[in-house]
Image (cartoon, rainbow, N blue to C red; front, side, top):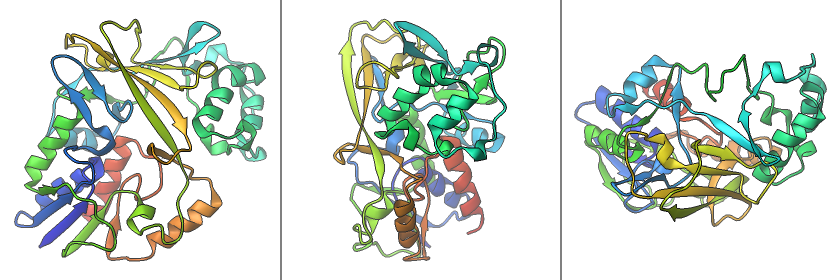
Length: 342
């Protein structure tokens, strides 16, 4: 049995590992369009001098023991509890908000048509403007009163003095040698051959099973049009020293970037010679990385369904192929469900 997997991100590599577990004698080929990059948007660079994640900060967190045990087959994890602050009025404020700092109102979310009206009624106008309104408008590029409630309805509120961003996630951490090494270990275990080549519907390899994990509209050469994404321009600067105690600081109201990431704070057991600092600039420019699907756009959902139904013999798995935003653990969970049924 020959299997072709298009894309070497977490979803594609999880497919390869699980298929190797099920079918010891299958032949697996993986096609990756980014030359010499393994791991998709989790790709990172770790050496004695510095550490950074090329496509923005990725922190693994989950309550799923099966997913946690699966990844620990391929890497140890550095203990890390994610904490985030927002730069507001010249000071660093904790994110998420604390319940005792917010005068919550009982509201029925179904009564509101947009994110702004909902948060104005839920936590008040002042906190909404300080923490969420400007940040969301920078992030998505449209007015806050035009964003759907789904964008903000799950805004977390921590209890007491809890300052972790994922306080209810049992397992958290960063691969001790980076995500790229974890992904290379998955690739090695799967015994898959990797080819650095872009594959679309017009040049499919001969296979008994094809799994696609990339941009689904690009795969079909935009036959029905382009899906809408919010793109991110990742800019990096190197410093001998950069004074930032937290790995991630949000900037909702100041500057054009949305956040600054100090990647060395993810791996505290290393003594790096310099700091690689990441700045994120959301954009509509397609030359940057398509990171966030505009999933509420009705036209895009209709276009996606057309692509999704062109060829039922191809499995479309992963964040880009399924046109939804997925954390790492949820992406792996989805693969578990699909592969178990093969």
